[in-house]
Length: 313
Ligand SMILES: NC(=O)c1ccc[n+]([C@@H]2O[C@H](COP(=O)([O-])OP(=O)(O)OC[C@H]3O[C@@H](n4cnc5c(N)ncnc54)[C@H](OP(=O)(O)O)[C@@H]3O)[C@@H](O)[C@H]2O)c1
Image (cartoon, rainbow, N blue to C red; front, side):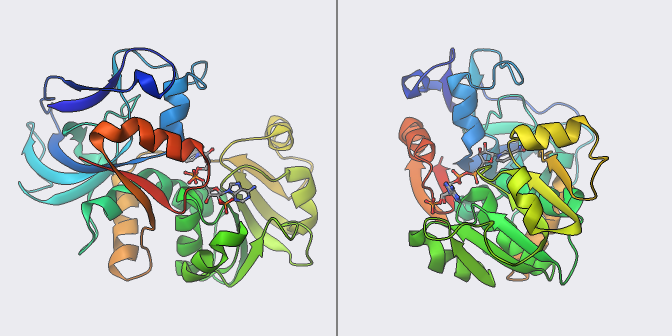
């Protein structure tokens, strides 16, 4: 099969399109023919070696955590999905292995694709959508009527966070740049703050959850915008969050935490349900071919994606 392989840490020139053996499904695994993957910042952070101390990878490695495609086989003990069924997943493999034509994954990480969604739209969801869901639900304890701030509301994680928070009945404020204000409104945000003309933490509104999807806010400053018992969740911890976690969040009822997304088929099925109910959609920034994985990484590294960058396979 064709796959994008890297032999060591480095720039996009490390990404090479090669023929590699097709994986064979082990017990409880399904074999999926991948039709689309999507780019997440972790892909290029891993490629560049930025995470080598906390998340080392073995070479040669195939990157990519998101996939959508069709089931084409299974190992013994796997029977949840039929041949030809359209599925999607966040891979649990250390480097992902989804920039490839096939992947074998344990069934528990896989879910049926949302009805009527293209493979590109479905492949955009898993890692970013699960991050948003687990941050708001498991860390934030989101509830109907709560005030929720999503910083980075036009990006991969933030675009799903706004929609999930709305689906949970929250009153959502999205933070984005001036070019994305209308887009974030279309995701359903009740209020939108353009961070270039207004300080996202400078207003009078008090939030039950602040989800800093792009990790540009300070927890210290955010505290003044938080309800007495509320939660600040970030994707990448800054010094304030690290200090709060280190002392066990004991001196204040305003808690801080860092989301570490977990692959989870049941959570993906929940997102499938939201999409089927018309409450979750994917905004596609750009689609690249498999051989253009380097260009896709550079686009993501630019930090200006509106929604998700997809790789068609
Ligand atoms: N810990 C975990 O489990 C986990 C999981 C997923 C992601 N992450 C991390 O979370 C971060 C975000 O991921 P992502 O996929 O959402 O990234 P992304 O899609 O590449 O984010 C791009 C978006 O960020 C917005 N942005 C840039 N600077 C901003 C600012 N100062 N304020 C508000 N918005 C800003 C941009 O909007 P404008 O063009 O309008 O500025 C753009 O729409 C990455 O660092 C990623 O590695 C961590």
